[in-house]
Image (tube, rainbow, N blue to C red; front, side):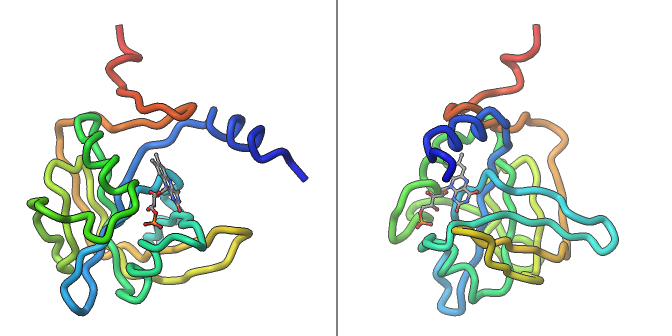
Length: 161
Ligand SMILES: Cc1cc2nc3c(=O)[nH]c(=O)nc-3n(C[C@H](O)[C@H](O)[C@H](O)COP(=O)(O)O)c2cc1C
């Protein structure tokens, strides 16, 4: 058995971007969760994926929708990141947002967005692999991504001189 603290510490040395997965359910309730394990998978067909915890309450609410939007957060969206990483009954309370072509919540000022249909969900250890088929996508020309590295948030600007 690998020591969990060592596993987290070593894997935390691999930097990621930060996305919020959003979806609206049949009753109109909006759900969202922060994900660092997002990745592109395939170009033809266009597939993306991420790994939600099997115990995630937010994923349990998003899964039945069968669709989701990936919102890529900018470095000026730390407050939004904290909001969607916390456990709360209504993470969208008092939050203005737009809609994607498929009608999913589109977070204002996200630097990119990807509308997906859930193609496959596979159990992998204590997480799930969710594969999304890309139906529409877009990005802003300006803005830098929010980065997560060694348990802290970073901005690309720090890396430039
Ligand atoms: C930077 C960052 C990355 C995260 N990445 C993931 C992830 O890849 N998978 C996951 O299940 N949770 C991830 N989380 C945790 C969830 O965002 C969050 O804790 C969860 O949605 C709240 O619990 P709930 O889903 O049970 O409501 C991440 C949190 C942060 C702050």
